Image (tube, rainbow, N blue to C red; front, top):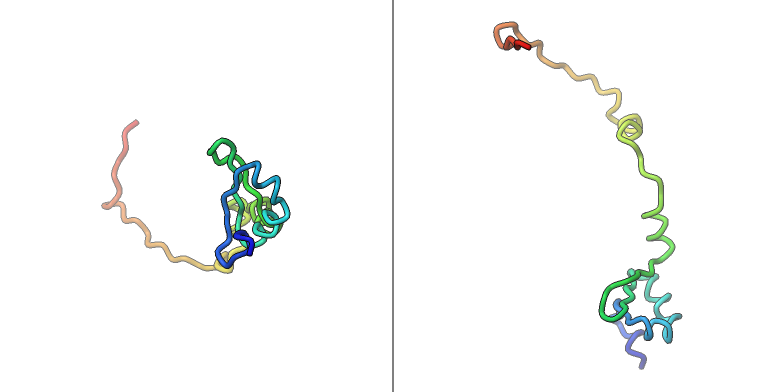
Length: 91
């Protein structure tokens, strides 16, 4: 039995091995990212299309996040500051 299709899948591949076993690398990437090494150094990653889309999707700005929040219409009651609790600042 091929060691790459056993229950525990490999996730680190030397470049030469990844070239020779490209279809296995692609199949394994459907489950978890596959790391390609060159001379022992992690150089590239092969991701499933789902993982790629998550990473490449546009992010919201803080303003958009607040506008889309279910709490955006929440009324807050803030206590009024009393003049005796305020400090005078000299510029």
